[in-house]
Image (cartoon, rainbow, N blue to C red; front, side, top):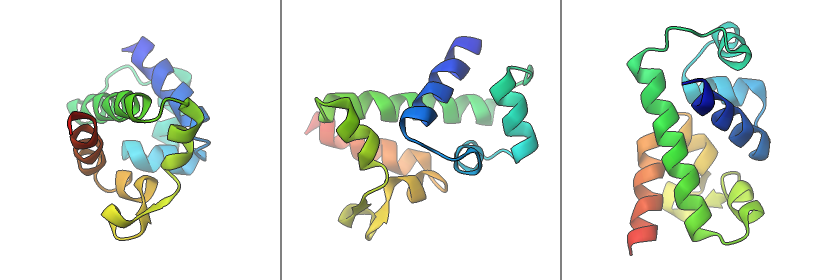
Length: 109
């Protein structure tokens, strides 16, 4: 799982998330997020593993939709009418699956 942790931390960096935003997306306290970030989070529960997998699927869909990666990285902070003018980031903090489902539907037409 360490490889996926590194991928997620790299993604969060590209998305320019604050540590609090990153912790919120993973549904972790800041203390637990720092453990996750340092690699000390040895016993990841299934919820955290699921969130990591959802984030990787979101990232994959964004790569497909936006040929220029920077556009996909910026997209998460732009208000979107599909999300009632909230940003994908705001929605991801509550429901990663909703964002992933939307993006995969866009990819699959």
